[in-house]
Image (cartoon, rainbow, N blue to C red):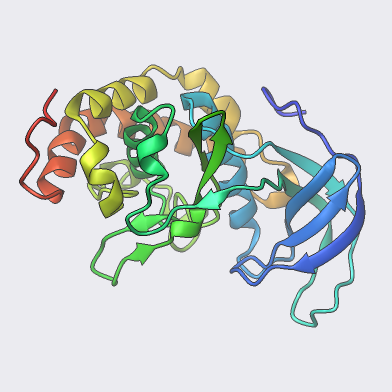
Length: 271
């Protein structure tokens, strides 16, 4: 079992359907409830499984909530979709949650129990170079509200982050995890809806949280994917070192980059 993971399905009991996203995940019934399964043979490749697992573990470590997750051995599975090939082997399972997704001008944000989670999410997405939620770049950008969910938390809401199959690298992890990976200075995750909630204090606190994670913990996380997913120990150790370097470098450039990118009218947001 992965460190800190307490939800562990043992088997798939029924495949309900194939979802129409890039990895064509399976929505399944398991002995531990409904789950979303990303598997070997998916169209996005093995790297999508590696990035899902690494991002979920890192998010949990810095205090962001994700659905419960696990790595589970599955058999070959036939589906009704001829374009879907589910190969047997270790698969990434994510517990299916009933939650609402973010939407333009959403009022759910204003009811967050921990408003500082917004700054932590922007800092986290920038740390792992996550294009799965929001990236405003020269290629036309990415805007995916569906990858931010809100769960009821008594009279408040709680942020829940999902889907990291395109984090860390645009092409392949083996090609992009190099000495330049930590030096890129692009802000990720900065939805327009987040701007009114961000403060320099919360951004700095989030950066301090990242920088406080010990290299040994990051290395253990980077080494956690099963060998069948093809993520070599050499690349894992290189990524661990670069994550530490990137977190420290971000402390210098990210706060100004965030607030320069936002509208200039930030009265009262310097606290």
